[in-house]
Amino acid sequence: MIEHLAILGATGAVGREACGLVEERGLRFGRLSLLGSARTAGARITVAGETIEVAEAGKSGFDGVTHAIFSAGAERSQRFAPIALGAGAVIVDNSSAFRMDAGVPLVIPEINPDDLRHHEGIIANPNCSALIMDVVTWPLHRVNRLRRIVVSTYQAASGAGAAAMQELVDQSRAVLRGERPVPNVFPHPIAFNLFSHDSSIGPDGYNAEERKIIQETRKIFHEPDLAISATCIRVPVRRAHSESINLTFERPITPEEAREILAAAPGIRVVDDAESNRFPMPLEAEGRDEVLVGRIRQDASQPDGRGLGLFACGDQLRKGAALNAIQILELLAEAESE
Image (cartoon, rainbow, N blue to C red; front, top):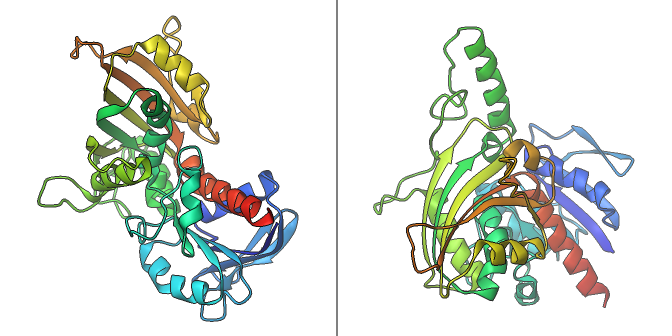
């Protein structure tokens, strides 16, 4: 059991999802503290039948906390991590602040749970797009080593937070009324539109989201030289990311072999009904724990049989963020009870 759990950023989209999952999965804890900014302090959230008032995170906010989920962005993670660590807490951080630090494990429980043994107080949750891709490619990689991954993502508004989700709704209503959508959270209109992911472009031409997918996957897989190329696009979908993934393997592999491997893997649901033309859709991935995968087919451009194409959808707020953090806490609690 977790003695004292704190959730930083409890009123945000990921924080609220984590609160719901604490109850849904029956995570056992002695005490729960919900922390936020001065603006959100005083809000009330009901978790496991108890209504808890959100407190402002500060120097005393982590007193007595043994475990913490951080879901308030990289800047706040960097600000509050030393305070939480000083109080003796183990942090599961959802931001990008510590993911690539050498001493911080970057963990997906279905892939590298053993890395948790090497934490020094902080465990990082991966980028949501990297996580969704990795869940479905890792089982294949274990059987037949991957040589190259090319991924195109179709990323939901939820990746930019609750305000971005509301902007999608508000702009959609405006467009249907014949009005011009006015962007506020996003740099461009999101309703009935799509655009390159709203993160900074580096000198290599890749944006920050694309670099996260590349670098984080290599770290999680312990494959520093794995060839990966990513293109990340924001689309007018509420909360589930979709990804078109092209793979090159060390040895030939058939779609039938891939379906069998994926069907037996944890955290995955195969949706691959060619006869009915039914494959993963973000609407059906929303609210699910599993990542949906389908459109599994031989890559016609790789005649040696070493290439596959597939399509995956995963709930960005759930498995892409909050659920993965809760699963990490469950593993920590289990290890600490042994």
